[in-house]
Image 1 (spheres, helix red, strand yellow):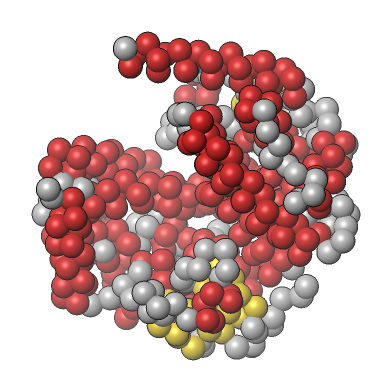
Image 2: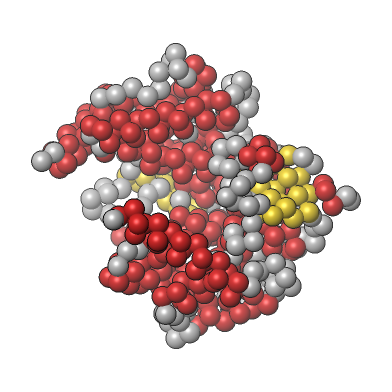
Length: 233
Length: 228
């Protein structure tokens, strides 16, 4: 199969694009990775995702698919023979979709909220909220993993991908705020899971280097802070 | 954990006139599934609801063979896989991805529409402008020339956007402005009429007069709280 048959429009810091990289790797799909400059978006990106103009976009047989979780489900369905990303049982699939939605609708906005919080009190509240969410996810991990390494059991799956893509950004938030979010005493399951996830064969070569991500985040977030400060004067 | 079989007992915890509740009612109706309906009083949530949805404590919750599923989109996908008759999703993976994309778009944009209901004056005008932009996207890109968002028959996206057919005009009247005008959005307007006539949907639409009373009351309370 020609590599150009499958293209991923992504950006190396994007956790959402990372989800797609991991899903394609789980299925051992050969793909062409196109790195987008999000400050100068390509014609291909604008044409492929006219509604949101965002990465990731998967282009398969010249047809674009957008929205990271829709893409991951597409990959699971289009390459149906390789290891499954979603479980086979409908109730287990519903549980997996529920937690992926929780991560996207509740937890990630909280993580994002840390960077946007102004002032020490707001920052502390934002960080506490992220930790509270992780406590909820720790309980979910206990129930879903049933003592195994991943939410999906022995191999990484849908919820692992949905949450694991943010581990680099959790590290960024921890370093920038000089705190721990993934606490080994409060979230032992997740703490162990995080290490195993990052070491997984489908993940380790595509996960961005944590310190490079921190450098990138410092650059972007400090520039944004300067902009806010100057516009407030 | 294995799923319940098609024949096992189905219960829906819902609340009138929640459009999220109705999404599940429509799917139950379209797939001809027998169920027991439990109307929740959201100001006094039952122990059952708190037990079945501890994370959000919200309706709708579908309980199948004693096992709860929350979040309307998750429920719809579960129903599609458990009761495949009268499918809501196409077979082709690409078409399924498109349906999921537009369902998510509909979900993510609903706060913009709610904003016209909870704001007044300039803020409301701004919200109305944003809402019309989303309607334009739905009109031109999501629906296009199709009869339904799902194609020739209704599907997941139609159900997720069904609130535009049953609720939007009531909310417009309660909030005192018009968004979905027939001249500006002819395709969406035609879709609304078509959607309301679909067997399975038309018997399951909330009473307009009752809804108007409900939303007008809410609007009055909101204005009283924001007006100095």
